[in-house]
Length: 121
Image (tube, rainbow, N blue to C red; front, side, top):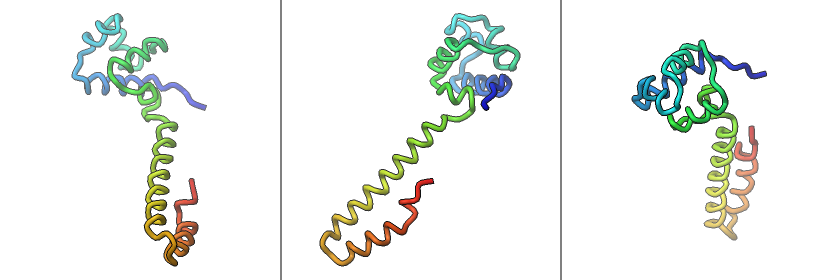
């Protein structure tokens, strides 16, 4: 089960804001909230609404998963893994095309089947 850690969220919010070289007051003005609310969120004393969370992520150009969980999220990781697998399969296909009709082709296919490319974690 996932629990919301306000303190960790606040630290990530502060880091993202500072990364954009913004003051609490500047961020508060853009978001139409009080500077005190930004300060309280960064200290983990106050939470924000989902609407405000989305606005914060847009203004600071940071993924909501990054703000909430501290990571880009599992979906990104799975997408990256699939892209990596697709790249490896493309390389294998090119290699097989180059060796089309040769004895090496059969050997390459055997070696590929036994390699780790086919075992997806």
